[in-house]
Length: 212
Image (cartoon, rainbow, N blue to C red):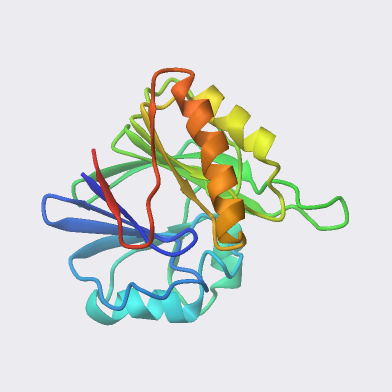
């Protein structure tokens, strides 16, 4: 499986000629067309993880494909046919097997209501938590996409998340809120965390890929 990072939280997974698109949000710039998509996954309703423009970009060349997300996404994206998924659900789409974890977005501030969020585990090997630190249970994660910068994120908590998951490889995501020096600082902390269990950090820029 090939995992390609795009701006901020957008990911494209490719296997056996099929693709999954995850979180095509408002920061997306370099993904201008994508074909052979079997599904779109939206982890939650915030615009940096989905917009009508992002969905329409994917649906233009892949009409009729399913879109999966939690109940909050179905309410926010009411103009689209969203299949609601919840923590504990497992589905198969194309050649991909998806399991969902978590359920709640990380707290930004006590004054801001919490919303639905799901982390997604693909083929039992790649995990992306959305905007949360939800740890997948009973899973040997090969590659983790770990948030590195956000209004809700403290880098020490992100490091603890990597330590808890103990993946074999990590790359940073959710990073467009950071300056370049801030991004490099955050990446260095995640690199330290993954190395504690013998893992490797990959500094992926938009358009870069990692093979699983």
